[in-house]
Amino acid sequence: MNSISLVSLNVNGLNNPIKRTKIILKMRKLKAQVIFMQETHLSQEEHEKLKKFGFRNTYYSTCKQSNKRGVAILIQNSTKFECLKEIKDTEGRYIIVKGKLQEEMVTLINVYAPPESTKQFFKSLFPVMALKSEGIVICAGDFNMIMDHRVDTTSIKRNKTHISKFVNMSLKEHGLVDVWRELHPKEKDYTHYSTLYNTPRPGSNSM
Image (cartoon, rainbow, N blue to C red; front, side, top):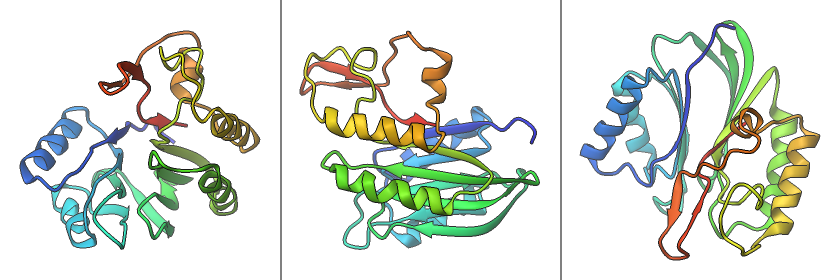
């Protein structure tokens, strides 16, 4: 497979048309070919509108009960892709798309784990990922957790460490690697700052 430009972004809602356009323009500037968006907060009809921005291969999961959550995978029109299978979560927390990207078999997974997610969510997610994955697996998203308290936050609190340990163990078992952390094993860089807790923490993950 030739090199592919991937971007993972928690958009925190795309209902505002102006914000939606600005984000798409930024993605074009970055020359993103595959975009993983979390917290789209869009209905099925609104997700469909993303296709007109040059992403006819748009796959998404919405929350049927409301417009909260929501994840989407957008593939640029000029990027050759053939979808073979699509698995959607009914609560807008993940989408799994299997197909041929530039003639290479891949599985694209986009996950949004709401802050209130328990260990049970991840225990149900990983078996689905394992059963449905084929070829090169690219998993991106926002897990809303601190993967490594030593380097991923400045907070001294150790909330949900049992979930972090389980997720890290599961990632290892499934052969998934945190790409950014693999390339920057000791670097401390944060994409989210919590004004409530006055601490920075990591943002979206890509594996």
